[in-house]
Length: 224
Ligand code: CA
Image (cartoon, rainbow, N blue to C red; front, side, top):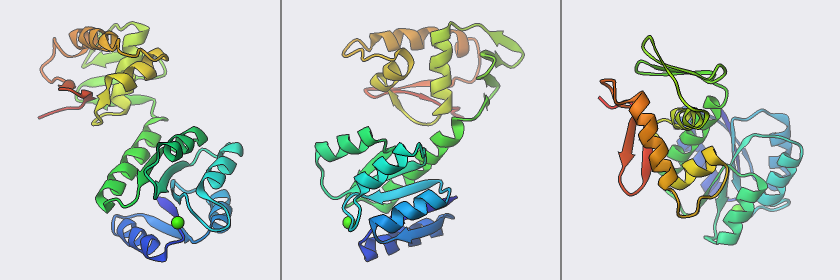
Protein backbone atom coordinates (compact mmCIF):
# COMPACT_ATOMS: atom_id res chain seq x y z
CA UNK A 1 0.00 0.00 0.00
CA UNK A 2 1.79 3.09 -1.26
CA UNK A 3 0.69 6.59 -0.31
CA UNK A 4 1.78 9.95 -1.71
CA UNK A 5 1.84 12.96 0.60
CA UNK A 6 1.78 16.33 -1.18
CA UNK A 7 2.53 18.86 1.54
CA UNK A 8 4.90 21.83 1.61
CA UNK A 9 5.05 22.12 5.40
CA UNK A 10 8.07 19.94 6.07
CA UNK A 11 7.20 19.17 9.69
CA UNK A 12 3.65 18.10 8.84
CA UNK A 13 4.84 15.94 5.95
CA UNK A 14 7.48 14.26 8.14
CA UNK A 15 4.98 13.66 10.94
CA UNK A 16 2.43 12.08 8.56
CA UNK A 17 5.08 10.03 6.83
CA UNK A 18 6.43 8.65 10.09
CA UNK A 19 2.96 7.73 11.34
CA UNK A 20 1.96 6.05 8.10
CA UNK A 21 5.21 4.09 7.88
CA UNK A 22 4.69 2.87 11.43
CA UNK A 23 1.33 1.58 10.27
CA UNK A 24 2.77 -0.39 7.40
CA UNK A 25 2.38 1.98 4.46
CA UNK A 26 5.07 2.90 1.94
CA UNK A 27 5.23 6.69 1.69
CA UNK A 28 6.52 9.23 -0.82
CA UNK A 29 6.56 12.97 -0.16
CA UNK A 30 6.26 15.82 -2.65
CA UNK A 31 6.92 19.30 -1.27
CA UNK A 32 5.30 21.27 -4.05
CA UNK A 33 2.38 20.94 -6.40
CA UNK A 34 4.30 20.28 -9.61
CA UNK A 35 6.31 17.39 -8.13
CA UNK A 36 3.12 16.09 -6.56
CA UNK A 37 1.26 15.99 -9.86
CA UNK A 38 4.22 14.42 -11.65
CA UNK A 39 4.53 11.63 -9.09
CA UNK A 40 0.78 11.03 -9.06
CA UNK A 41 0.80 10.67 -12.84
CA UNK A 42 3.72 8.24 -12.84
CA UNK A 43 3.15 5.96 -9.87
CA UNK A 44 -0.02 3.98 -9.15
CA UNK A 45 -0.53 5.04 -5.53
CA UNK A 46 -3.33 3.65 -3.43
CA UNK A 47 -4.05 7.11 -2.08
CA UNK A 48 -2.87 10.71 -2.17
CA UNK A 49 -2.95 12.97 0.87
CA UNK A 50 -3.20 16.33 -0.82
CA UNK A 51 -2.73 19.68 0.86
CA UNK A 52 -4.78 22.47 -0.73
CA UNK A 53 -2.37 25.36 -0.19
CA UNK A 54 0.81 24.49 -2.08
CA UNK A 55 3.50 26.41 -3.93
CA UNK A 56 3.57 25.97 -7.69
CA UNK A 57 0.26 24.27 -8.20
CA UNK A 58 -2.46 24.14 -5.54
CA UNK A 59 -4.25 21.00 -4.42
CA UNK A 60 -7.45 21.82 -6.30
CA UNK A 61 -5.54 22.16 -9.58
CA UNK A 62 -3.77 18.84 -9.02
CA UNK A 63 -7.03 17.10 -8.19
CA UNK A 64 -8.80 18.67 -11.18
CA UNK A 65 -5.96 17.68 -13.47
CA UNK A 66 -5.93 14.06 -12.28
CA UNK A 67 -9.67 13.66 -12.64
CA UNK A 68 -9.57 15.25 -16.08
CA UNK A 69 -7.11 12.53 -17.08
CA UNK A 70 -9.64 10.07 -15.71
CA UNK A 71 -7.22 9.10 -12.94
CA UNK A 72 -9.45 7.63 -10.21
CA UNK A 73 -6.84 7.48 -7.49
CA UNK A 74 -8.30 8.08 -4.03
CA UNK A 75 -7.65 11.59 -2.79
CA UNK A 76 -7.81 12.86 0.79
CA UNK A 77 -7.68 16.67 0.81
CA UNK A 78 -6.11 18.60 3.67
CA UNK A 79 -7.38 22.10 4.15
CA UNK A 80 -6.27 24.66 6.69
CA UNK A 81 -9.48 26.59 6.46
CA UNK A 82 -12.71 25.24 7.74
CA UNK A 83 -14.66 26.86 4.95
CA UNK A 84 -17.64 25.18 3.42
CA UNK A 85 -16.67 26.58 0.00
CA UNK A 86 -13.34 24.76 0.06
CA UNK A 87 -14.87 21.49 1.12
CA UNK A 88 -17.62 21.70 -1.48
CA UNK A 89 -15.13 22.63 -4.18
CA UNK A 90 -12.89 19.71 -3.24
CA UNK A 91 -15.70 17.19 -3.27
CA UNK A 92 -17.06 18.57 -6.54
CA UNK A 93 -13.64 18.19 -8.09
CA UNK A 94 -13.68 14.54 -7.06
CA UNK A 95 -11.92 14.32 -3.69
CA UNK A 96 -12.92 11.18 -1.78
CA UNK A 97 -12.64 12.81 1.62
CA UNK A 98 -11.12 15.83 3.33
CA UNK A 99 -9.68 16.75 6.70
CA UNK A 100 -9.43 20.21 8.22
CA UNK A 101 -6.12 21.09 9.88
CA UNK A 102 -5.23 20.64 12.62
CA UNK A 103 -6.34 17.04 12.96
CA UNK A 104 -5.33 14.05 15.06
CA UNK A 105 -3.25 11.44 13.28
CA UNK A 106 -5.57 8.71 14.55
CA UNK A 107 -8.44 10.42 12.75
CA UNK A 108 -6.48 10.58 9.50
CA UNK A 109 -5.53 6.92 9.81
CA UNK A 110 -9.12 5.85 10.44
CA UNK A 111 -10.34 7.83 7.41
CA UNK A 112 -7.60 6.41 5.21
CA UNK A 113 -8.47 2.86 6.22
CA UNK A 114 -12.13 3.46 5.46
CA UNK A 115 -11.27 4.89 2.04
CA UNK A 116 -8.98 2.00 1.18
CA UNK A 117 -11.53 -0.55 2.32
CA UNK A 118 -14.28 1.10 0.32
CA UNK A 119 -12.09 1.03 -2.74
CA UNK A 120 -11.33 -2.65 -2.40
CA UNK A 121 -14.93 -3.66 -1.97
CA UNK A 122 -15.90 -1.96 -5.23
CA UNK A 123 -14.50 -4.90 -7.08
CA UNK A 124 -15.61 -7.74 -4.88
CA UNK A 125 -18.18 -9.91 -6.59
CA UNK A 126 -19.01 -12.19 -3.69
CA UNK A 127 -19.42 -10.98 -0.16
CA UNK A 128 -19.62 -13.39 2.75
CA UNK A 129 -20.43 -12.50 6.30
CA UNK A 130 -21.45 -15.16 8.83
CA UNK A 131 -23.53 -17.57 6.72
CA UNK A 132 -24.81 -14.81 4.45
CA UNK A 133 -23.50 -14.82 0.91
CA UNK A 134 -24.18 -12.14 -1.68
CA UNK A 135 -23.33 -12.66 -5.32
CA UNK A 136 -23.20 -9.14 -6.72
CA UNK A 137 -23.04 -10.30 -10.31
CA UNK A 138 -25.82 -12.88 -10.28
CA UNK A 139 -27.93 -10.90 -7.81
CA UNK A 140 -28.33 -13.88 -5.53
CA UNK A 141 -28.44 -13.98 -1.78
CA UNK A 142 -28.12 -17.03 0.44
CA UNK A 143 -28.09 -17.65 4.15
CA UNK A 144 -26.54 -21.04 4.48
CA UNK A 145 -28.24 -23.17 1.84
CA UNK A 146 -31.38 -21.09 1.83
CA UNK A 147 -31.88 -18.79 -1.15
CA UNK A 148 -33.42 -15.46 -0.16
CA UNK A 149 -35.60 -13.62 -2.66
CA UNK A 150 -35.17 -9.87 -2.61
CA UNK A 151 -36.68 -7.12 -4.70
CA UNK A 152 -34.16 -5.12 -6.78
CA UNK A 153 -34.21 -2.27 -4.25
CA UNK A 154 -33.82 -4.62 -1.31
CA UNK A 155 -30.88 -6.22 -3.06
CA UNK A 156 -29.24 -2.85 -3.72
CA UNK A 157 -29.77 -1.85 -0.11
CA UNK A 158 -28.24 -5.07 1.20
CA UNK A 159 -25.30 -4.78 -1.19
CA UNK A 160 -24.61 -1.18 -0.16
CA UNK A 161 -24.63 -2.08 3.52
CA UNK A 162 -22.55 -5.22 3.06
CA UNK A 163 -19.95 -3.41 0.96
CA UNK A 164 -19.59 -0.82 3.66
CA UNK A 165 -19.87 -3.22 6.58
CA UNK A 166 -18.89 -1.81 9.95
CA UNK A 167 -19.62 1.72 8.77
CA UNK A 168 -22.68 3.50 10.14
CA UNK A 169 -24.75 4.69 7.19
CA UNK A 170 -27.18 7.55 7.71
CA UNK A 171 -30.68 7.41 6.23
CA UNK A 172 -29.70 10.24 3.90
CA UNK A 173 -26.68 8.37 2.56
CA UNK A 174 -28.72 5.22 2.09
CA UNK A 175 -31.55 7.00 0.29
CA UNK A 176 -29.14 8.81 -2.01
CA UNK A 177 -27.25 5.64 -2.85
CA UNK A 178 -30.17 3.31 -3.33
CA UNK A 179 -32.90 5.56 -4.67
CA UNK A 180 -30.73 8.07 -6.53
CA UNK A 181 -32.75 11.01 -5.36
CA UNK A 182 -32.82 13.28 -2.37
CA UNK A 183 -35.69 12.26 -0.20
CA UNK A 184 -35.29 15.36 1.91
CA UNK A 185 -37.10 14.57 5.10
CA UNK A 186 -38.86 11.48 3.85
CA UNK A 187 -36.25 9.05 5.10
CA UNK A 188 -39.11 6.92 6.36
CA UNK A 189 -38.75 5.12 3.04
CA UNK A 190 -35.40 3.85 4.27
CA UNK A 191 -36.81 2.59 7.55
CA UNK A 192 -39.55 0.71 5.75
CA UNK A 193 -37.10 -0.87 3.33
CA UNK A 194 -34.76 -1.85 6.15
CA UNK A 195 -37.63 -3.46 8.02
CA UNK A 196 -38.55 -5.55 4.96
CA UNK A 197 -34.93 -6.50 4.42
CA UNK A 198 -34.49 -7.56 8.03
CA UNK A 199 -37.64 -9.57 7.81
CA UNK A 200 -36.09 -11.66 5.04
CA UNK A 201 -32.39 -11.60 5.85
CA UNK A 202 -32.18 -11.45 9.64
CA UNK A 203 -35.39 -12.40 11.44
CA UNK A 204 -35.44 -16.12 10.63
CA UNK A 205 -31.77 -16.55 11.54
CA UNK A 206 -29.75 -16.66 14.72
CA UNK A 207 -27.05 -14.11 13.91
CA UNK A 208 -28.40 -10.63 13.12
CA UNK A 209 -26.41 -8.53 10.69
CA UNK A 210 -28.40 -5.29 10.35
CA UNK A 211 -28.29 -3.08 13.42
CA UNK A 212 -29.92 0.25 14.24
CA UNK A 213 -27.70 3.02 15.55
CA UNK A 214 -30.17 5.24 17.30
CA UNK A 215 -30.32 8.78 15.97
CA UNK A 216 -27.75 8.03 13.27
CA UNK A 217 -28.72 5.25 10.94
CA UNK A 218 -27.84 1.63 10.32
CA UNK A 219 -24.77 -0.55 10.36
CA UNK A 220 -24.20 -3.96 8.82
CA UNK A 221 -21.92 -6.20 10.85
CA UNK A 222 -21.69 -9.48 12.70
CA UNK A 223 -21.81 -8.95 16.44
CA UNK A 224 -20.73 -11.72 18.73
CA1 CA B 1 0.44 24.02 2.66
